[in-house]
View 1 (cartoon, rainbow, N blue to C red):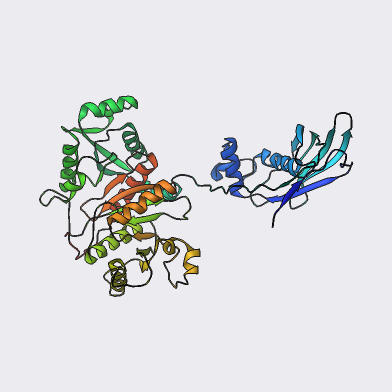
View 2 (tube, rainbow, N blue to C red):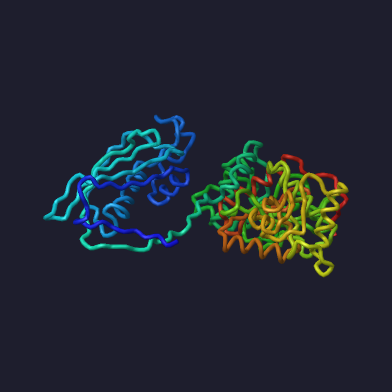
Length: 470
């Protein structure tokens, strides 16, 4: 049904005319007002600070109520065509999240010569208490206006990296791991490493060509003498040295915060010099997706190209073990395919069915596994309901297992580019975890990747496993 807004002209307005609207304050209202205005006063946004403040709770910006008064004046009385001239406001009580505010304006005077209208303005809460009072003077319209109400765009509020915060906090409480850092050749990469150090996540050994490292440090005003530095001839040698330190037990993790031109993956799996162990290594992305309510793990999109069924079993187990280390108590694993039905023509559906049976036989443990599932049915409760799926995983997956590296890589890139997601990567299954932040050096990604490495190293997620490197 089409909605319209209509004004009242100066001649139509009478002393005593009144208009009102009612709104209930939400946390999103406060955050959106802060984004719009730039007012990040902790009284409005920081719960810990607010508890120690005079009101002992988060309260709305005072001008949130003022904006609602403007809404009534501009859309109802007088409505479209109104020119705001002046406004007085007195803030008499705080407005907290959950309060329902009724905003009312009442005409108190008219100036026929100047077409000016004076209105009393009051905002009252659900208890009838006045929270804001004041007076407005406007220039009222002379011509009648009736317009279709404009449909507003949807606003999605998401703090970048919000789904990483619990992981970073959990890891910072365990103490830093000794980490070999592979040639942070860009300022953003080195800055991320310094941030991870200050966050009590890593104790870095920075490896790479000394001259460019010092140039990068100078641009950031960082004194590299405060860190252990191991010079190498080039980036490839830095990768090899990092792996050698891990193999010797000198470091507990490897971090590559750069663009990874240096053959690190090759060094990791080298037969005589790599860090392969009794398990198959696999890559996992931890994705912070704005429209998804939890951290989303995607595997394998960085290491195993076209995994066999046995390799997929190891990939699934690695992802479950990581999820457990991150604090996800019973990870929900979706084995992705193009369709939900098992088809001999689609290997991904056959593998999914076999992996689910492996759970029944105890060959995969620690999580709930279901598949085949399409992407939409794995992450969307609404889509899963429409498909009439009976599943403990559908619509609420913590882990997505891609059929192969191509599919996984495209999925991650789509979330990155079209959904404004952030990613932090890690390789598990070897002697030490390998943290792989976004190549951009995004500090949040660096912190999240290092935090995952800490949790893997400190929680002893390695389990005896018959799945060997192929």
